[in-house]
Image 1 (spheres, rainbow, N blue to C red):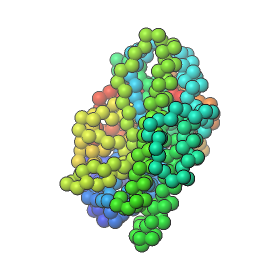
Image 2: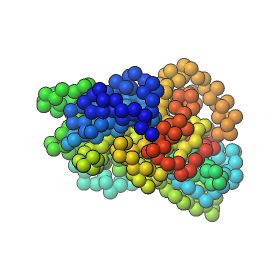
Image 3: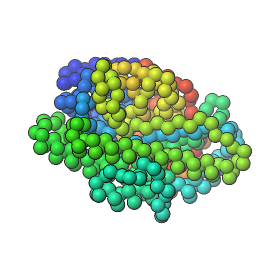
Image 4: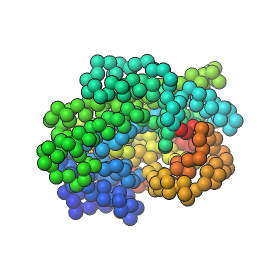
Amino acid sequence: MLSQIIKTEKVPIYLYLDKKDVEPDCFKQIQDIANLEPAYHHVAVMPDTHLGFGMPIGGVLALDQAICPNAVGVDIGCGVRLIQTSLKSQEMPAEKRERVLQQISRVVPTGFYHHKKSQERPDFFKDLKLPKFFNNEIKEALKQLGTLGGGNHFIEWQKDEEENLYVMIHCGSRHFGKKINDYYHRLAKEWCQEQKINLPTTELAYFSTEVKIGQEYIYAMQLAIDFAEENRKRISEAIKKVLIQEYKQVDFGIDIDVHHNYAAEEEHFNKKVWVHRKGAVLADKGRKVLVPGSLMTPSFIGIGQGAPDSFNSCSHGAGRTLGRRQAKRQYSMEQILKELREGGIVLVKAKKGDIAEESVHVYKDIMEVMRNQESLVKIDKKLMPLGVLMG
């Protein structure tokens, strides 16, 4: 539920968590987006918010006739896909969970690895209208389709309260999305300088959506969103093939795909605006959403409540509390691996030395996050982790 409204900036700040739970650097970023000239009505801050580049993760920002690359994020179109299987969790004991994840890791490259050959070109990569700068990036992107990446990206076995087995995939647009962000953020800074626009920080440089370069970024952003969705789809297809080899009679049920780094033109408070959701999810009334937890914690299928004050949004996960370097200093690999074993969770990861960066200790309490957003999303199913493949 809405915790606090702060009216000290150009537009109000609507917090869906207690202000004391927002780190100072993150709150400064919240103030910065609330002071952008085209910011409309208010900014909404999800309960998983934490420090990002320019705009905080878990921020929702509406801009009037403007588009901001860093308010979308580096991993454009990053999101989560969930597939229900006809299997019960008992049909995949720990040893088999690990073996099947190992098989998946052989067909789905992780970390910095990608396919050696270009994958089949999707339709949205035909007749492209991007600058020549991206020709080489497209070639590389075609090798990255159907790859997981690293960091907090994962493939996870999960079960619901009836012991039904699911697979959850979290990944995005790989290097392709980053290149788009970096290129257009640089051009946005130049455009704002040319227009003599006063910015709270150059990290929040934007374009007018009425100018050619702004429209070009929107086109490129949508390409990256399509790429990210296709990436998760191809990973899911690879996983299904592995499961069919192991379980001849397996069937697949619900298939939900949700992205959380993007901007879209929507109508809110009687005006069409560009809503930027950076680490936030569209949660229209009745819409199914996915809110993943962290290692050893539950994930959720939710039903959006269409809350106007959140711009019909909810959180995209638990939200970090510790940076990656600090996490490795505070928690050892041995400690995390021991906790996973004791929790009955299988881990498949090529390089385990950085596992502390994604442990349960560096994320907010997912149950508290869900309580804080009861007015934004209703829990439909709680899914518990059984095994995970990470980059």
